[in-house]
Amino acid sequence: MRKLLALGITILMLLSIGYLTACNPNDEGTSDFMQGTYITDDGMGQIKLYGDDEYSFNIIFISRSISGRYTVTGSKLSLYDDSYELVFSIENDKIVFVAAFFDGKEEDWIMQPGKEFSFQELTEVDAEDMVDYSGFHFESARSSHGAPIVLNYNNSEAIFECCVNNGLFYLQNVTDVNNIEVAPGGGFWWIPSEDTFNSNNRVFVDVVLKLDNRIIGYAVIELYSSDPTRLNFLARTIKSSLFPIIDGEYQKITAIQVNSIINKIKEEK
Image 1 (tube, rainbow, N blue to C red):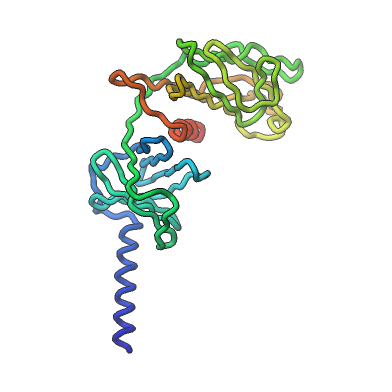
Image 2 (cartoon, rainbow, N blue to C red; image 1 turned 90 degrees about the vertical axis):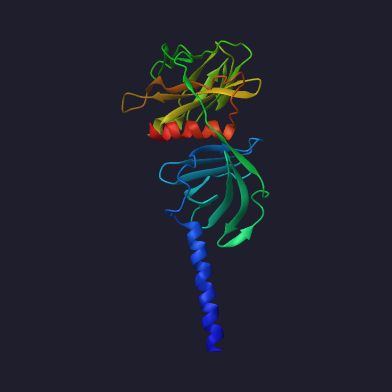
């Protein structure tokens, strides 16, 4: 009986060591493995590997981003947080999903084994002329909107999709909206809400530029007050960029990907 108990403990210890090896950083990783962004062909999922072995994982049907640390051991990539471990195999410039574990138990609902994520190296160019806010201001005392914020692009078939996290857009006599579409050369006004006056939350307008339903650029605009009363607001562009055509083809940019870029810009500003 004692021998069986000792054997059982030994097996458990070996299993534990194997699990910890898969779930914790080590020095056996592949040194030339590329950090960056990996996406699925259908644009439904994205994995971003960055920094000191950090990652973020997004898939369309999970509302939140999963993040934590990753390890690379030979051709095996493991993404993990306190409860999850997602295991992938590394194949050239792709990573292929193998299995998911929750508290050490395999789960089969996240995605099918064999799902491929391809490496995508994005190229951006600054687009300083995309946003013209030079005439915009909001003055509470006079309810003055000033000139609109104008969005520019050299193709009339494109469209700017805009959303604001605080306050309301004012466009063509329509107010009380947080999401609008603007044609190139068109513009919008913005007015604060009661919450804008009563909080110190920063106000951002996220802008995504699309052409033929492809994402080809973005901008992050901040609406800010230079006085402590927050009664008057001005605008400034934090960043505006285009994704240029590479080798005759548009770069493949997903909504998850551009939202991740925009959110990172706002967090770092």
